[in-house]
Amino acid sequence: MKAVVVIVMLLCSSSIVTSLRAPEPEPEPPSPAPTSSPSTLDPKQVIALESLDIPTARDPCGQPSFHNATLCDNAKPFRHLISLRLANCSSYLSLSFTALKALSTLRSLTLLNCPAAPTHLPPQLATSLTSFTCVNSLRKVSGVWLSQLQNLTHLTVSDVQVKASGPFVILAHMSKLTSLTISNANLTGSLPGHLHSNLTHIDFSLNHLKGSIPPSITMLLNLQTLNLSSNALSGQIPPSIGDLISLQNLSLASNSFSGSIPDSLSALPDLLHMDLSSNQLNGSIPKFISQIKSLSYLNLANNNLRGVLPFNLSFINRLQVFKVAGNSNLCYNRSVLSSKLKLRISPCDKFGMPVSPPAKDSSADDTTDDDYDETDDEGSRHKKDHHHGPNKFVLGVAIALSSIVFLIVFLILCSKCCR
Ligand SMILES: *[C@@H]1O[C@H](CO)[C@@H](O)[C@H](O)[C@H]1NC(C)=O
Ligand SMILES: *[C@@H]1O[C@H](CO)[C@@H](O)[C@H](O)[C@H]1NC(C)=O
Ligand SMILES: *[C@@H]1O[C@H](CO)[C@@H](O)[C@H](O)[C@H]1NC(C)=O
Ligand SMILES: *[C@@H]1O[C@H](CO)[C@@H](O)[C@H](O)[C@H]1NC(C)=O
Ligand SMILES: *[C@@H]1O[C@H](CO)[C@@H](O)[C@H](O)[C@H]1NC(C)=O
Ligand SMILES: *[C@@H]1O[C@H](CO)[C@@H](O)[C@H](O)[C@H]1NC(C)=O
Ligand SMILES: *[C@@H]1O[C@H](CO)[C@@H](O)[C@H](O)[C@H]1NC(C)=O
Ligand SMILES: *[C@@H]1O[C@H](CO)[C@@H](O)[C@H](O)[C@H]1NC(C)=O
Ligand SMILES: *[C@@H]1O[C@H](CO)[C@@H](O)[C@H](O)[C@H]1NC(C)=O
Ligand SMILES: *[C@@H]1O[C@H](CO)[C@@H](O)[C@H](O)[C@H]1NC(C)=O
Image (tube, rainbow, N blue to C red):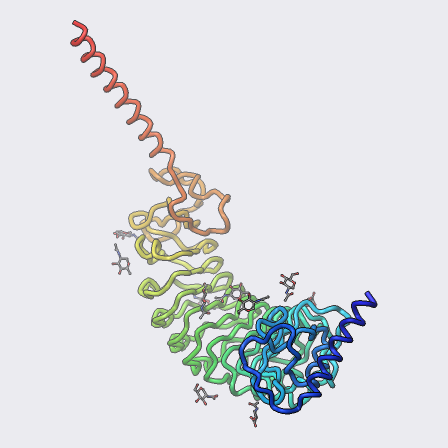
C-alpha cells in the first residue's frame, strides 16, 4: 500500500517536473498521446486532479482518458481541462476551494455518486461552467449555491436534496439554460412564473412542487420534454398547453390536476408520449387525441374520466402503450371495441354508461370473467398475447373431423384396391 502511494507520488512529481522543465511551446499534436509521454496539462491542474483522486500517471489529456474522466483543450504551452467527471468517489474525498479554483477552465463538471461536501464555489469556476451534472452527490445543495452557475446551458441535479424556497431561486439568472432537470430532490415551492424561452427540456419529476402550471409556460415554443410527474401540483391543465408546438414528451402523472383534458393537446403535431395518469381529471376524453399522428404512448389511467371511450381499434393498435384503467365512469362501446383488448374498463350500456357491476356480467356473448382478471400489470394492454380457448377448441374439432374423413376415404380406397 505504502509502496503504491510512493510510486504514484514519484510518478506525479516527475510528471510535474518534466512539464515544468518544458515551458517552451511544444509541437505536441492534439492526437492521442502515447501513454508514456509527460503530461501536457497545466501543472496546477495536475495537482488539483491528484487531490481529487484522479490518477495522473498517464497524461490526463491523452484520449481516451482514465474512465473518460477528463477532456482537455489544445492550448499552448499547457493544455487545460474543459470537462471533468468524478464518479464513485471515496467518502473521504473533499472538494477543496484551491482545487476547484485551479479547475476554473472547466466548461463541464459531472459528479456521479460523489458524496463530497459542497464547497464554497470559486466565482471563476461558477461562470466558466456551461454544463453541470450532480447525481447522488454533494450530500445536499442549496438553491443559492446552484444559482451562481449563471452561464449554464445544461443543469441536471437528481437524487440529491436541493434546499430552496422554489425553483425560481435557482433559475433566476440562468438565462442561457436549454436543458433543466431537478429530479428526486425534495424540491419545494411552485413552478416559476417565468422560464427562459430557449428551454427544450424541463424535468421536475419526483419533488414536492405545489400550485398550478403557470399560463406563461406557453412561451416555451422550443420545449420538447415537460416532465412534472410525481409532485403535488393541482389546478387545471391550461388549455394554452396546445401552444407548445415542439412538445414530444409530456408527463403530468401522479399529481392532483383536475378539470378536463384540454382539446388543445390534440394540436401538438409531434407528441409522442403523453402520461396524464393518477390525477383527478374528469369529463370525457377528447376524441381528437386519436388524430395525433405521432402518438405512441398514451396513459390516462387512474382519473375520473367518464363517458364512452372515443377510440377505434386501428388507433389503439397503433399505440405501443395504452392505459385507461382506474376510471370507474369510463366505458367502451362493444360494437366498436372487443373485450379481448383487456382495457380494464366496463363495456357501455345503450345509454353510454358503464355496465355495472363490471366483473360479473355474463349476459354478453364474449364478456367473460376472463376480461377482468387482475393478473396483468395495472391495466396495460398487451398485443397478440392472447390465444383464446374457443379458437383452440374449434381448431381441434376441425383437425379431428378432417382426420376421420381422411381415414374413411383411405379405407374406401383400400377396400377397392384390395378387391
Ligand atoms: C470513453 O468514451 C468513448 C467514446 O465516447 C467510449 O467508446 C468508451 O467506451 C468510453 N470508455 C470508458 C472507460 O467509459
Ligand atoms: C460506478 O459504480 C457503478 C456501480 O457500482 C458502476 O456501474 C459504474 O461503472 C462506476 N462508474 C465508474 C466511472 O467507475
Ligand atoms: C459567463 O457570463 C458572463 C456574464 O454573462 C460573461 O461575461 C462571461 O464571459 C461568461 N463566461 C463564459 C466562460 O462564457
Ligand atoms: C427527501 O426527504 C425524505 C424524507 O424527508 C428523505 O427520506 C429522502 O432521503 C429525501 N430525498 C433526497 C433525494 O434527499
Ligand atoms: C436562444 O437561442 C438563440 C439561438 O440559439 C440565441 O440567439 C438567443 O440569444 C437565445 N436566447 C436567450 C434568451 O438566451
Ligand atoms: C418522467 O420522470 C419519471 C421519473 O423521473 C420517469 O420515470 C418518466 O419516464 C419520465 N417521463 C417522461 C415522459 O419523460
Ligand atoms: C421521449 O420519450 C421517449 C421514450 O418514451 C424517448 O425515447 C425520447 O428520447 C424522448 N424524447 C425527448 C425529446 O425527450
Ligand atoms: C370536474 O371537476 C371540476 C373541479 O374539480 C368541477 O368543477 C367540474 O364540475 C367537474 N366536471 C364534471 C363534468 O364532472
Ligand atoms: C379510427 O379513428 C381514426 C381517428 O379518429 C380515423 O381516422 C379512422 O378512420 C378510424 N378507423 C376506422 C376503421 O374506423
Ligand atoms: C356504439 O357504436 C355503435 C356503432 O358505431 C353506435 O350505433 C352506438 O350508438 C354506439 N353506442 C354508444 C353507447 O355510444
